[in-house]
Amino acid sequence: MGILLSIVFNAFALWVTTFVPGILFRGNLVTLLIGGVILGLFNLIVRPLALLLSLPLLILTLGLFYFVLNGILLWLASLFIPGYVVQGLVPGILGALVITIINWILHHLVSGK
Image (tube, rainbow, N blue to C red; front, side, top):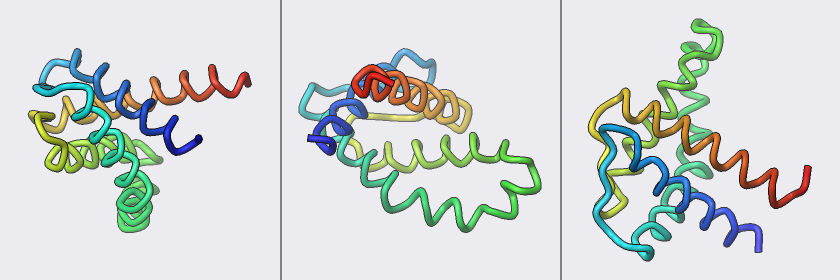
């Protein structure tokens, strides 16, 4: 149940990011759910490797590079999500911030914490 819920949360968060200027989506609910799966896989596989490789920059910038890294990862994920386009680094950073906030809120609402 947890994996399915994460996919739905990611799909909803992807839909919310379409309100960020520079992020476009042309698709349907199935496409969003596919995007939720892809985003989940990126968080599971690509993010840990990217964090490890960018550790010196994260330390040097006192963690601020984490926002840039999230934006880059969202842009990379968008290359695999049909109909989802991130048009640059700033929309990617803002979109990643929106996804983080939405997922945090939804997980806290469901878990009751």
